[in-house]
Image (tube, rainbow, N blue to C red; front, side, top):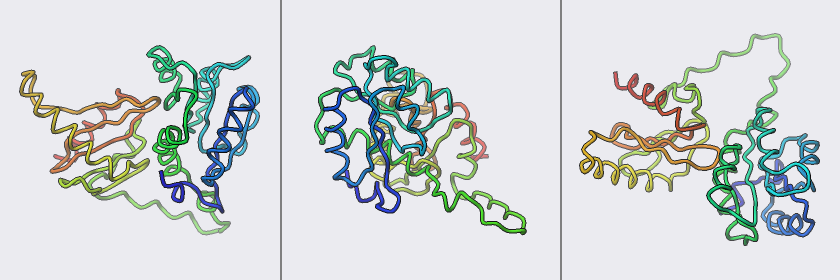
Length: 259
C-alpha cells in the first residue's frame, strides 16, 4: 500500500479503532499513525457511538467486547445510514463469523493477531472507495450568493447514467487491454482490470461446458458490498454495488446503452 495517496496532512484520513483491549488499540495506533493516518480510539461500541462527530473514514472494531458487540455496532450504524466502511476483528474467523459480519454490513473480518503486512492491504481497497466518495467540505458548501445555483452538467460518456442506478456505488470500465477507459463513483484501481478480464474469460470458456447459454455476468461478494463483472463493448465493466440483487438493474442499463 502507498499511504501517500491515502492520506493528506491537511485533511488526514481518520480511522476509529474500537476495542476493549488497551494493548490492541495501542498496537493499531503504532501501525496506522506512522503511515499518516489520524487514529481515534474507543474502548467500547457504546463509546464509539458517541465519538462519531466528525465521522471517521473507516472503523476497525472488535467483535467480542463487554456490552455491545462489534456486530451490533455495525448493524446500528447501517440502520442509521452510515456508509463508512467497518472492518471487524476477531480471534476466531470461521464461516459463521464471516456470514454474520457480511449480514451486519461489515466490509470484512480480520483475524487477530495480525501484522502490518496483513492489516494495511486488507483495509486499502475499502479506504480508497470511501475516500473517492468523500466530498471536501469546501466543495460541499455552496458559496453565499444571490445567483441561482448552476445546473449540474449531464453525465456523458460510456458510463452515462450508471451512477444513478439504485444500488450502484461506482463503476470502472476496462478496455480490451485492461486499462481504465472510464470511471464513475467509487472506482476500482487499474490493476483490478487484469483480474476482471481473466475471470470473465474463464467464465465464458466454462459456459460452453455447462450448456446454459452465454455468460451474463459474475458477482463477487466482499463483506458489505459486491463487485459485478460483465462484458461491455470490447472490454469489461466492474460495478461496486450494494448487493447481488442490483445485477438486474445494471443489466437493464447496459441494454439501454446498446439500443
